Image 1 (cartoon, helix red, strand yellow):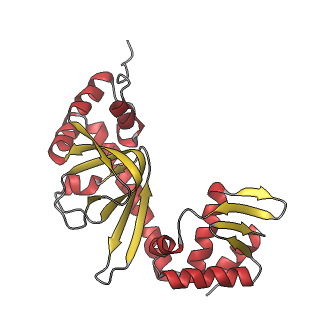
Image 2 (cartoon, rainbow, N blue to C red):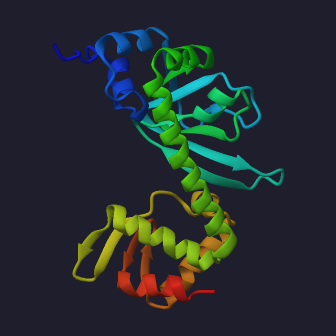
Length: 237
């Protein structure tokens, strides 16, 4: 008889959406759910702070969580924005270290929390989950290498263009005049994401508009020629 899936409850559905726990049998899911706690956070509320002792693993149920590093000057670098189904803080759960970055809720957010001790015990009982943790951590490492490369080898103009292209490809609507989309955040948050300051984001967006490559109305952006903008990204220095 094939293994039955975990009975549907709000918490169990959140767990089953996570890459780490996909494919759990009913008994495995029930065992995990018994060790989990449901938590709610308001917009901007801190889940954990860089340098704090790791208490456990978070699975995003709804909303989003912003992972970032902070400098003594107050500047921030966004490492990732994790949505429903994503797991957070796998590495310190296993290596026993502190949280390597901070995490804030973006809007009303709900998570499922599993303590470090409980999650380690579960992985000892179910090694296949530990293997999935390795896959997730590997993917995170590749993403971080990409961030380092972008910050080290590209200009602010190139990073702004790359962000516009990614946003257009992710949510753009093709119109007779070009590709139109809404910026997912304001200039300050964009600066945090691409490793610069708000003034340089605004200045580069204004220059792209003056060059006739884009049109901006608030957070609404129109890219007149996506291919031409991609060329500009490669040529900018």
